Image 1 (cartoon, rainbow, N blue to C red):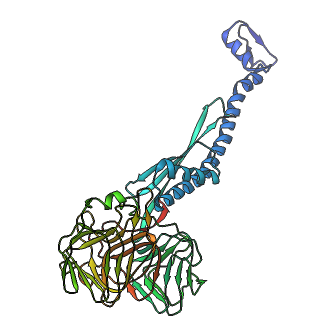
Image 2 (cartoon, helix red, strand yellow):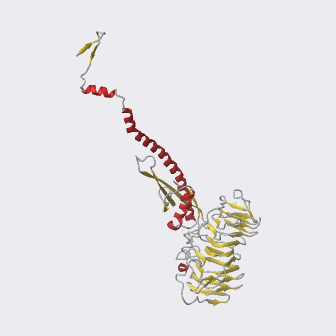
Image 3 (cartoon, rainbow, N blue to C red):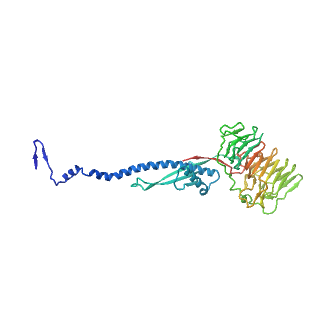
Length: 460
């Protein structure tokens, strides 16, 4: 039905009350409770999204903080490796855990990978931190996440020391007055924490080296120097590093008692041959109970290994040599001070003429003089923990001189021919006259492993 209004041109049509379209129209104009229903449905979603945004910000801040903790953990673990402590469970994880905790990390124990390498890192330590986080406000969404961080510390070799002093207190390396030490391609490393860890006794002392590394400090006449502006007595290729990490003894795990006595006869001694003032040892690889070379006497060793179960003494102008040795061709001698019973001897060379070079191959390649020090039988003692190697004019030693448990007074030079290699690993060292040391020819002389000074840098 159509109704006519006062305006004849306008006709109003009304749909039947029960039609579907009418119901829809009435519902769309009905405000009674619809907004509340919509809000009830959407409000939890909106709150969830807002809470997720807030918690995401919180998780991001935790990730930033934990990255600093991961960086510190990786660096700390890498310095343990530099110090010779590379056991993951015993050394690296505890170091990483402590460093991470000090930097705010509160999650589970860090995961450590060593050695780590990839396309950018040849040797490093990788540390991963994983800290679970519950979704407190945004519970309608994920039940929680794990904030993960990784850091990689690369270990890079800076230098190979020609002198490594292992003592941890007092003066480690002392250069006497009127003494110059030349070692331009290698460094001095001292593990002492003393302010005089490396000490030049006087302004007439001097050292030319690649650099100096020490846990403690470097001093001149008892006064610590400024490492950034060393006095003229120090001629160095790169800046002094004080407060550095201790340098590990690279031979401690290999030059053990069991290793250096391999091949040592259980009974019987070397049989010398006398010819006037000269004593010849024509057969090597034997035991010498003790060896004393008096003034004016000469001992001529055949190439090979000699185990000394007593002391080695060379008095002024006494001569200890190997005429058949040849440093150019790697034919040499190794002298090992060890024991058949329970006492290890020492060396006392006072202005004697010693000309010895290490063999270039074999089990003792690169070793010229070794004092037994690692993995000793229970009850073993030293006759003295002080040795002296002060060669007279023209004396040379070529190879590793290894006395890690003893102090030493030393002066000397490497071989004049063939690959030059003279390295000292001692507990404490006093250089009492002009000397030169060299590591440039050690690989050619058979010494494949060298002491290393390393640094740590974050790689990733």
